[in-house]
Image 1 (cartoon, rainbow, N blue to C red):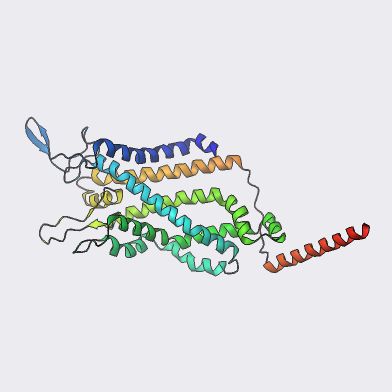
Image 2: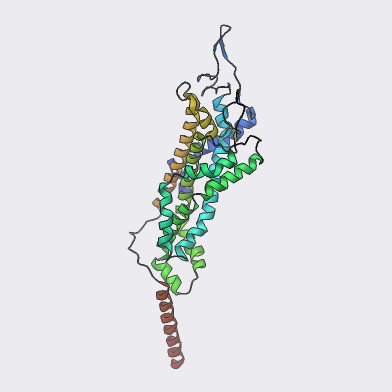
Length: 343
């Protein structure tokens, strides 16, 4: 594990994530949780530019349509976006791991039709499921929200985790089943090891590295779904909707999370492209950082372990294992009789 910290790709990715997460808390501690506000820019006593203000030395990423600094909004919202994506991926893995191990060991005979049921989900964008399930929760009704922002975030994390649990569980089940028919596992089963012991003592250590890589991939997938939901005006923690028919403001995010910044500013892509560009580049940097960490971690692990060429595995039924156990017991009985006779 120490060799991971010697991988340049892993260090670069970790530095980017640390910059956004740590910088978000430090920025809020120093400057507060309200972004800097500029009404207009003056030159020689005359107003030359109003919101949205283009990027300059005072506002490196410009300001939004209300004059709030975009860089400050991105830094303040970084912790909500990244931590929410990590929470979704962690909950997803926590649920999918036991299900995957069960599919790969206890339900070997049913695994083929389980995979057949789950495979079509690969071709349906998860954003569609997320939008259908989350709109009643995140879109503010005319009478206002009946739930708190914490409750809405928790519901969103749970729903986004659950919609892809079957896919992740099937993937883990296939990997577990592949290991379950290795020769050393077959020997353990012949000696009487239970499936639970095999999962805990053999499968879990063997799949630990792959599960860490899979977790990173799920964080990336969660960030992408967040961005898609932002375009559909469903923001983390809820969408604040103004129902005034004459002077209503467009839907906005309650916090400064990046999906909300991206979704709110996308309509300015032609006139003020720096508004959606800031959140989009931030999303891209974090996704690239996680991909770099995964690649660095994979290189570090592959540099330590020499992988043998995988042999073609055949299915070994429980009847075969029971027959092997009976043969082993009969041999032990004969050996015990021979030892007694010799004495």
